[in-house]
Amino acid sequence: MSDLEAYRAKAAAWLESMVPTYGKAARKGLSEADDLALARKYQKAKFDAGYAGINWPTEFGGQGKGHLEKVTFDTEEMKHGFPSFYFGISLGMPIPVLMQFGEDKAWVKERVLKALQGEEIWCQLFSEPAGGSDLAGLRTKAEPDGNGWKINGQKVWTSWAHYSDYGVIVVRTDPNVPKHKGLTYFWVDMKAPGVTVRPIKLVGGDSHVNEVFFDDVKIGDDHRMSPVGGGFAVAIATLMIERYVATDSAGFGPHLDLFVELAKDTELNGKPAIEDGRIRQQIARNYAMRSGLQSITARAMAMMQAGMTPGPEGSLNKLVAVRSRQKLSELAIDLQGSDGFTYDDHASQKEDWTSSWINAPTGRIAGGSDETLLNTIAEKILGLPQDHRPDKGVPFNQIPA
Image 1 (cartoon, rainbow, N blue to C red):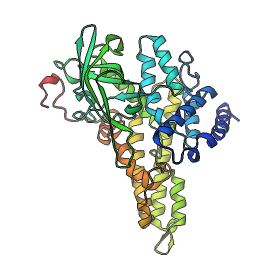
Image 2: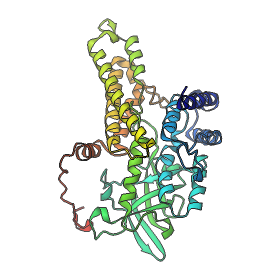
Image 3: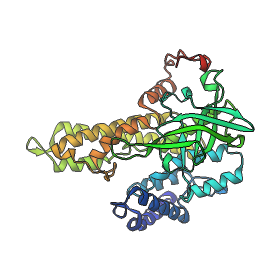
Image 4: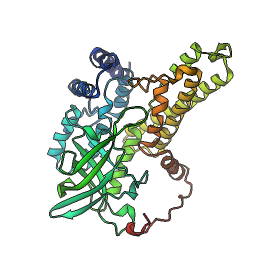
C-alpha cells in the first residue's frame, strides 16, 4: 500500500466514524441555524483530527501536506453529506489569499486558526450588479479618508455573507486610469457600521447568496492587501485558486453511477431504459467526458505537487462539468415522468436529480460565467485573438455607463 493509499484509508475510517453525528441522517430536518451550529462542531472535529488546512503551511496552523492528500480527503469526505459547505468559500479563497498577502502575520495567523476551527467565516466581495463577470468593471469605490479609506457601493452574489465575520473586497480607488489599473484589494469587517447584508432567495429555495451594501464604511490603510491600484493582480490570484477549488467532474451533481441505476429501474417503451441505444450513448458520452476532466485535474495536481503552477485548464473543468450536470439531470427527470417534478427542499444536489437540475444555473454563473470561461479558454488555451474590447486603455471614468 502506497503512502497516499494509507492516508486515504485512515481518512476514510475517520470520516466513517463521524457519520452518525454529522452525516446526512443526523442533519435531516434541521433548521439552517442548527445545521450551521453542527457544521461548526464538525469543522472543529476536523481541525482536532488534523484534517483542516491539510495542504497549508504549519506556521499558520495547517498540516503541511501536499495537494494530493487534500484532494484525497475531499473525495472521501464528499461521500457522506457533511455540512462543510458553509466554510467552502472562506477556506477556499479568502483565507489562502490572506496568508499570501496579509501584512500583519500575527493577526493573519489568529484569523486562520479561527477559520480552520469553524469559529469565523470569510466571504469574497467581487461581483457587482453593473459589472457582471467583468471584475475590472466594478464601481464600488474607496476614497482616502484621513489615515484610511471610506467605501461606498454595492456587491451582489456574495455567498454566505450573512454569516461572515470578515470579507475580502476589490474596489475602485482611481477612476482616472484604465479599468484594470484603478483597483485596490482590502479586507473588511462585515460587522462594521455601514455594512448591510440582504439575502437573495434562489429558485431552489435557499438563500446562501446576498446583496451587500457599503455606506460610508471606514477602514484603516492596514486593511489594504495590495499596492494602491494593484488590486487586479491579487484578485486574479484569488480566481486561479477558485478554479481548482471548484473541481468535480460531476459538476457537484449526482455521480454517473446513479444515472445508470435509474436507467436500470426505469422503463422506456416497455423495456428497461438501460437497453435504449440513446440512453446508452448518453452514458458513454458522459463517462468519456468526465474521465477526460479527471485526467486534467490529475495533471494539475501532479504539477502542484512538483511545485509548478497549473495553467488555465481549470476554466475548462468548471465549464464542461456543470453543463454536463445540467443536461444529464434534465434527462434523468424526463425518464422519471411526472415523478421527476417532485421537489424536496432538503434533498442533496449530489443525490437528487431535480434538486441538481434546478440549482445547476447557479453553478454556471458562480466563479465566472460560462461566457467568461469561454473567453479564457479561447485566448489562454487555444491562443485565439482577443475578443473585441473597445474599453481597453480608456480611463474608467470615460467609459459609457
